[in-house]
Each structure stands twice: as structure tokens, then as C-alpha cells.
Image (cartoon, rainbow, N blue to C red; front, side, top):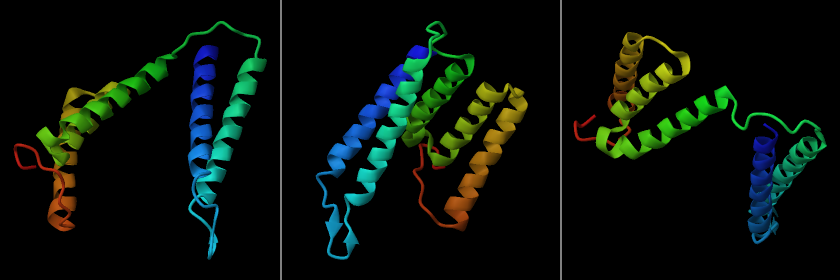
Length: 148
């Protein structure tokens, strides 16, 4: 776990440094007060500070043995893969059906629910998304080949 914390800390540190660098190219002040570079600069500074805190704590630990991924981390990676696949399939399936399937499959992966409850939840989610957003709020969502 130490190596995963170390890699994560370095990645977040690099992200924070990038935010500080790019926000420093924006005006810090404007004629009415803080400019567009004010908030991103300080968010970047906070990110760098948090990353440094994590890195110092990781480097101070003496235990060097541990698994890289815990069991729940692998589960989280599966969910991230499901999110990625869902967004790739949205043009084909449509928003309502795509998110309905995402909810059902994620329920199955995360909670080990029965297939029947996952299927029922998928159908109800797809219908509710369609009714609320398309019918009631008249917000156009991406529709797939079926038109849902």
C-alpha cells in the first residue's frame, strides 16, 4: 500500500503544480477585485500542500511491505471501467438505457444483489430518467438506436 500511496501523492503533487503553473498565467487581479487566476492559484496551492502532507507521511512510515491494491480498490477500478464503457456506449444505447444498465450492473458488481433486483432497478431507472428529463422537463438527452 505504501507504493500506491507514494504514486498517488506524486500524481496529485504534479496535478497541483500544473494548476499553479497554468493559473499563474491568468490575471490575479482585475479592476473589480480578484481576477480569473485568483481562485485556481489558491486551489493549486492547497492541492500541492495536501500532496506534500501525504508524501511526508508515506515517507516517514517504516513499513514497506503491503499489497499495492486492496480488495476494495479493485472494486473501485471495476466501477471506473464501467463508467468509461457506459460513456462509450451512450451514443449507441441512449442516455436512459445506458444509465439504467450502468446502475444495474454496478449494483451487481458492488453489492452482489440478485440479478432480478438489478434488472428491475435498471428498467425503473431507465423509465424514470426518460420520464423526468425528456417528458417532464423536456430536456433533450442523447438517444440511441432505439430512440430512448
